[in-house]
Length: 296
Length: 306
Image 1 (cartoon, rainbow over the protein chains, first blue to last red):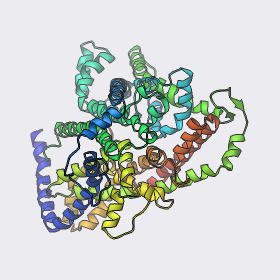
Image 2: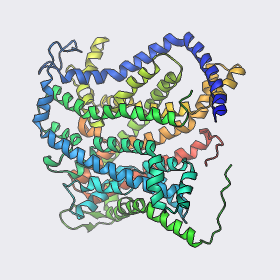
Image 3: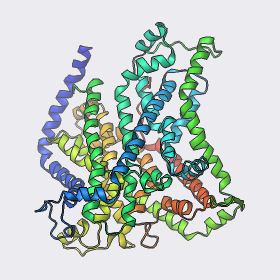
Image 4: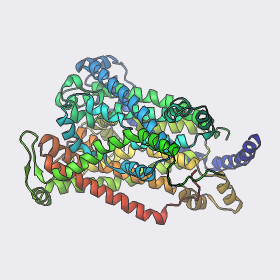
């Protein structure tokens, strides 16, 4: 094991040494281009944050005040009380938590079935599952709406939550299946010899080992449902049921929502995502270390 | 070495049990597929021959929706806009994402900081991004016009200009290149360093290494980004719904926005079902065409998947 690691690490050190030499020659132009791109990426974000703390009427002042002389953090409070934002937040959290639990649990179970059980038709069913990854979600919008309307679920959270308990996005199933297939079979075999059944092994042997994969799916699930706008727009009718994302829809109707407050709302909606990104990065790096690629 | 025993076709009780467990495990997905995907799709296949406003009972109108479609200027405007938007936004976004990923993959100082700064803005939720860019494109003194003034160009009306609204939306989409970039970076890191080593020994320069190692080895990733990029782009909705409402006129009317209007504002379920199916067929044909062409340019290494 150790010798294999050494073997693979020695050439990569040499290559890194070489590419460092190349980058000395090319360093300046590369840095200039990267700086320009970083500016292109960052400028709108800075614009959003700086506008969110500007005084009323200063949003369009020229030249642009990147750091306002007087900060107005109360814009955040004003954006918060303008709409029942706390209710929106509660609704978003409820939906995100239910979807997270549903998608991770059922996704992992379906993935484990595809990864570890042999059954007639597995190849075909897996292929069908994969092809639904390519299906534009908007295509099923209308008939799904009619279905949920027949069930009397309009203006409830059910059309947003219930589908999450059917395996989640096919991509999650695919990702978790790859993960399960990469696990050493010996542990599961040992549990089987000890008399544990298929689902028992899934729950107490495979799931704990698949934590990095489950974390990835959990993050994707949270992001998807926190950011989702279209589904709430179609199913949630009364304002008290709105999510944070759907709350933005009200900005269009209530004219004269000031841009500084709009940007404050946008920043508030972005913060949990950025928080998750930094947590995700840690997991991501740990995952790389775990899989043995961290030694490079 | 895989030395797994191939089991005979006739199932023993043990194998039957394993198969049953497998079916139970995948049951949530199978039910979800039937209830939320296949069922609704088949249902809407019948729905498109009806006229139904959800209030009265649906009436069978034969091919009337198809006739309406053939003469519907909004349908053609929406389709044309969506194709135009996709044809520019997807390749431009992927080019920028690939270029930046290549630069970031070079061993340079501050690599991680650059990556975070460049990636982070693309993670702003799309609704917040739409609000932000609506503000940036303000015809008075938004950021876009401030930059125009700064470089001595006349101010523009951006989202309120028939000719500029689509380019403005495309620039915004290109700006959201972070996800594609991260996928490219992951693909780049999977390329074995030994290949570059060998090429260096053979005296291949940077351009030839890019052309003959990086791009071929990355082609599956490029293909993946292209396929999912086009599928997503054909469904562009939130930006136009929040920022332009399809205007001015029909200049930014996109396919799904039109579908939404027909279905949920005009409550014409039959016609909306037809529009859904046409979107499905268009995206399916484009995806299949891409897979067919992929044989010529996507390089798959002979790695055995076990």
